[in-house]
Amino acid sequence: MSELTKLSASRIKTAQTCSWTYWCNYKLKLPDSGNDGSSRGTICHNVFELLGDKHKREFNKIVKEGTIWNTRAVASQVNKEAEELNVNDKENLDLIDEMIVNGLRCDFFGDTVEKPTHAESEKFFDLEIKDGIKRYAIRGYIDKLFVYKDNSVIIRDFKSSKSVFKGKEISDNLQNLIYCLAVKHLMPECNPQSEFLFLRFDLDRDLLGNYGKGFLKMDKISPEELEGFEYQLTEFQNYLDNFDKNTAMSNYAATQDYPKDGTFGGPLACGKDGYKMSRGEPILDKNGEPILAYICPYRKPMEYYALKDKDGNLKKTAFLEEKYKLTIEEGDEIVKMKYEGCPHWNNKEKIEDFLDAN
Image (cartoon, rainbow, N blue to C red):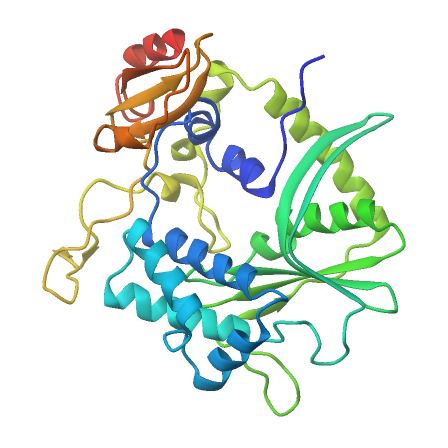
């Protein structure tokens, strides 16, 4: 029997948002330039991991002074990663600084009310469940995990997005469900509850002890709800284990309804080719230049390099200008490839030829 696809919240959400995006991301493994927001988030997470439970002196200095730039080890790491990810301009660095300080000041060690009996940063889980008709595999990292003497568990996740959750992002949050399920399997006697900290928003507590807009504590999930979710995961597992080129063209974002709860999805996920507009005019940045609109990275055609092993299996891809990122081992080869773009927006016959060749 073939190995189960490792499920994660992002993997499932990608497939739900657009079947073609899932194909491009997880099957074709097309290169993606990412964006400043995800790069900033990566840097913040790495600093939180560094300061997790070993560097109290650096933590205290940053919190006291309200900046990372006077702490040599952290400042050096941030500058290095920001340069590698091309977010080393002043605007991005200032925002990274603010988000890190904000996250560190919000009960970073989980001991504001009570000291945890156990705490972990970047808690990894990799579970495969086969129990009757339940059949699924889940994998992920929990940013911070706190266990208390009454067996309650806080699962904390840091978010660097420019908006807080709304609508179904709260009521049907896959990450919350998967993380709580994982903790319940790892620690059956414990009662997990998730917290999401949005680093670009207010996380301070008021005089009554209430956190700001950026702090979201999820409702506790009952054992019955978790068991029901396991059956949903089994359905997701079957769907993604059998995902092929026909499935890839079955649920385009462009053909779905616009979300009614203010979330990102449907045709919004396709974006548009051109500039951000307001009243018929391009929106300008601080230098007076038009700001490019968001567009799905897989919407338009591209050429790229693919690294394949001796059996022709795809290992990694890179943009033409980033060929140097592909490290060749014995028996590998690098092949120049041409991607014809999303079938919904481009020539469908060419796309089908491309799929047959891959």
